[in-house]
Image: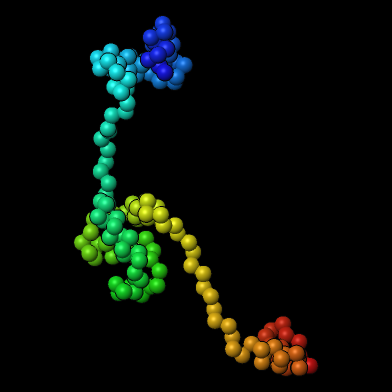
Length: 149
């Protein structure tokens, strides 16, 4: 859009101000188009950046780990945590990654953290206790604020 506006006669400074970019950017786009001669020259070029800390192979291994219980690897827990995953990766000689990096990797793999719910088994004596307390509520009361007969 910026190059089209310049080609229509608007100054690069005005175009830059309208589009919220620097005039240098507008001049660069116009120059690139005039040198290359086609609109594809304006496409974003690959940028350098920090390489990923976990490769595709390591992400696949992480997914494999998550399909198993941490107890199978000698941990005394039933669910994976980021800290336990990190410890397992270090045991295996994997890359030294932070917990934040692991969280990002887990997010990429589609995993979300949820607090585990604890489900207690029902009390098999509950019904007997309820019947006993209905028959004689004074005998069942106990504790500092309990009524006594």
